[in-house]
Image (cartoon, rainbow, N blue to C red; front, side, top):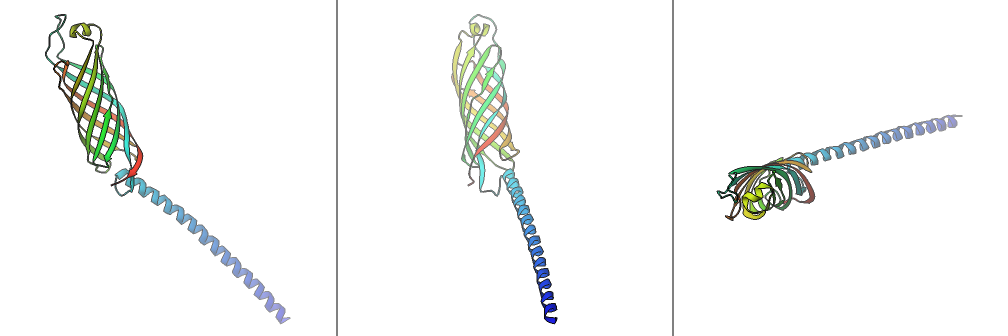
Length: 226
């Protein structure tokens, strides 16, 4: 009888101990999963903050496409009218801008190819610009300064064509640009730019072009930070 009671007590004690061990293991496993998920979320938050700040990450989005609007104040050369009617000394143009930026040295140097489209009622400009840009990354801010070449195919319409004595002209000049990009996320930014063009050829109608622009910038193609 005593042996039976001892065996029963051992059986119930062993089952109770196993239940406690199982419960503790389950609780520990649940805590481990929760902690792992929390660690992953924290790591993601840190990487996102580092990417936005532009520091501390092994990779960044380097190249970009920008698209936006621009305004050009064109200061014209003194010239004679083919119809003896007075010619404007300056004129305004509005248009759209499309830019591709290829980073050569991350956070320091980029090559930009820009294709603006500018127009008013009497004139249409289709420039192609190639600019070498020096970059200075400061957290989410990226100021820049650039020098490059400006090529422009210009078309006159209506009475303006008769006054200028030509329908189409080609212009080439030196371009200088400065501005900054504010980076909202690793993929998106806003760029403000001020450009100046001095036209070389004396046969061109324009002599100086001043162009402020605002562009939305989309960053793509990851690359190793240097």
